[in-house]
Every structure is written in structure tokens, then in C-alpha cells.
Image 1: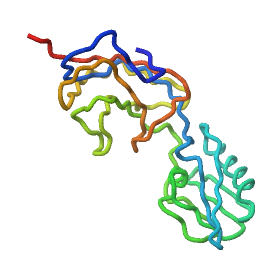
Image 2 (image 1 turned 90 degrees about the horizontal axis):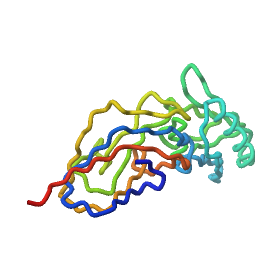
Image 3 (image 1 turned 30 degrees about the horizontal axis):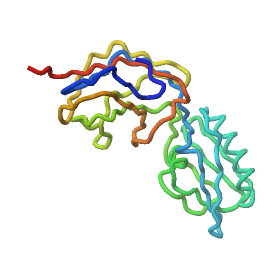
Length: 223
């Protein structure tokens, strides 16, 4: 099965489906590390005025991200001061300096850059954590109500896409043994919907590139 619309429609109704399994996954890593979820960096000057820098949605290396931050902060936040973003390859951390005091406000972009919380007023802010620019794990979620939960927060997950991969590569998983996941209760199924989500349950855009997998439904025949 090759998925581009994320919907699988069967020719006829399948009665009493009790479990599902996913095998033989071919998944291209074409989702960006900077997307609509985390591309807005918000800052505040010493007077309490807020402004933001919108990063272009794409995949970045550390060097490319520094350049993008420099460009967008200079364009959109020049009233605050002159900004100097830096990436320290030895620590794996970003820092952002400015000619005047400012805050970095807590959001998904600042989290991605390694900041835990809204920073205090200062001319230099070094990230608390390393920034992971590598592709994060992706989960394939179904609209079936499954009797399983991932990491205590994600529900109805049929497969985790993970491995030693990089942007633009293709993950092949032909070796993973079939694992049957039970439904909360038996259901008659005429179609299935699959959604790609991240660890927070937010939908991921794979930028129009298809992925494929084998879907097996297990059902109880009528006596």
C-alpha cells in the first residue's frame, strides 16, 4: 500500500476486525526540522514591546540556521538592536546576542533552539540545551481505537518511524516482526485513515512524498 492521501478504502466491509499490524515500511525522511510548528521566534525588548522573526520552513544545518536567524532578526527586529546568533559546535548549543537587552519568549521555536523557558533581560542568551537538528521520530496514527498507548500520551499509534536516518534518506524496515495491536473492541471496517504525528501528537507534513507499508487486519469470521 502506497499512501499519499493517508486514506485506505476497502472494496467491501470487513466485519469484526479485532487487531492490526504494520510491516514492510518504506518511509522517506522528507519532513523539515523547521516547520509551521516551530518557525516563529518571539522576542521582547526592555520596554516590553514584542516582535517576531519568521524562519523559512525548510531543513537546516546548524550553520544554515545561524544565517537564517541573522537574516530574519535583522529584517524583523532591527528596532530592538543588532543581533548576533552563534552556534558552538563544541557544546552543540546556540546563543543569540544583541546590542541591547532583550528576552527570548518561550514557544516551540525557542524550545527547538534549546531554551527551556522565557529568558530574563540580557544582551546574550546561551541556550540551556543542545539543539537536535536531526529528524525526530515520527509515529503513524490510525483512526481505529487501539488498546495501546505510547509514552503515556499518544494513542492509536500503529508504528514508530525511527532509526539512524538523515534528511533526504529513505528508511526501510523489512525486518521488524509483525506485532498485532488489539482494538479496544471489535469493529466493522470499510476504510482506514493514517496520520503522521510527532512526539507531541502534532501532525507532520511529509511534503507530498509518499510512504508505503503493509497493513494487516485480523478479524473473526462468523460461525
